[in-house]
Length: 218
Image 1 (cartoon, rainbow, N blue to C red):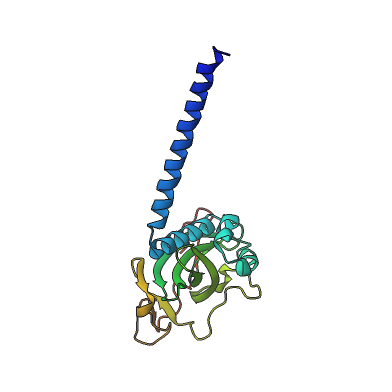
Image 2 (tube, rainbow, N blue to C red):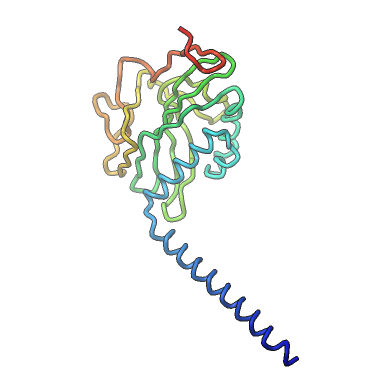
């Protein structure tokens, strides 16, 4: 017993040190998380969801979706990574409302694998959350471009009526507050939504035919 006592003390001391290190790490982590602003939470969720969706990780992206919209989200993205290959997802604008809800504008550049044609689709994503806990995607609406990006399902993304002539303006990923928000589609008002009326038609809605290597066929 006398010989075991130093060994037991050593093991106990090691365990206590490990526990103390874990407590310090947990405390620092909680402090850092609590120090993040709602804007940072929003930006993180928006970019991670769209990155995951772009690389066809719909299962991961769905974890950032409100439970009431999750099944619709999964069904509407069913052919991403199969019939649809998303080449780029460009978040052009983030708007944080006064009540904790938010919107993001995303323009997807994507290829229809069946025809090897390139399209662009601009989508408005509506988020819900209070910022302290995080945000969850509540719905998606197509503002411009080719609606065939999504599988047509009840309650899923659809082209907003009257928005066929809207085009997204690049906003350098700006984030605005709800106090500055303007209604989407107001003529002559670019606003924080990054949307402006245009007579030039949907964003890059004209398909570009490409060969199996992705090179444009002229």
